[in-house]
Image 1 (spheres, rainbow, N blue to C red):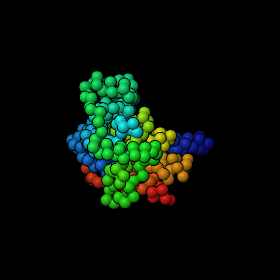
Image 2: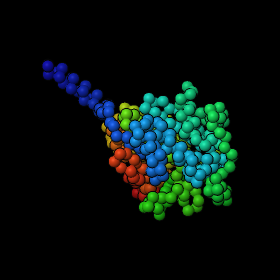
Image 3: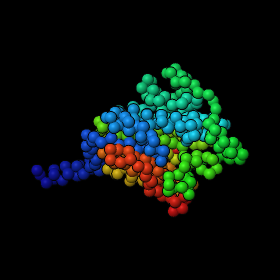
Image 4: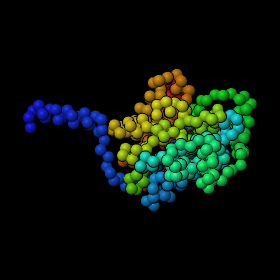
Length: 340
Ligand code: ASP
């Protein structure tokens, strides 16, 4: 080959490499699931019943999310904290290996928003249904209207919140005293310290899916929707590369299209943990002082089954389950409760 032509070809090769350096193995065979927070271990346990039998990642994440939504005194589902008008509104989404996705936001009185989100994906040409329309769609598809009432723990927390009625959308600074053992779901004042179950999984066929379910930020403004049901913010799956989910201050995640960004970093060849770190740094860099007062955690799983997480604050945890391990892990962070 002529020298000049060779140089031209090799520099073209280098620039192509820079754009897309990762060649993913098409056939990983070990299922892995990761879920946000320590309670993710129960979610994983449910999901594992499907994954370990060779089932589909989408079915596994839905099953895990439904388990979480069934818990009464919890940060997810109808037992969770209401908005500041005292009404529980739920957000959820799913995304599968074909980039099909479905979501619901501000859904009231329906027990399993994750399954409604899946139906939006499967039965409509749309991605996101909200509010009354989402509820109507759920009822039309066989979901039951649940009573409009707060769980005992949510009622107590709401009454406490009403004493000051202070609108302070600062969430997810974990309980300082409790990183080890894993933090309880509630802070000392009765409020929840986090509100989202995000799940991503790789199945035995090498396919990836994810799901998110949440009541969103506790005592939020009526109508407020966070990152959780927004594809590319609270959840993103690219079956060629990996998947990511998030928990924390949704507005900050939406601003950077957080989970889409994490997946794009993995596409560039970064490990899941580094991809999460780079996304967290985007948030922190924009306003480090503001970031000191809030939490965002990203959790990612790549096509090879490698996982990782990174958070703004200390205290973000996630649970992993595979054929080899079953545990709850902490992750690296930028601030130790607001301190560098
Ligand atoms: N990301 C959720 C939201 O902003 C809340 C959370 O994860 O705690 O609604």
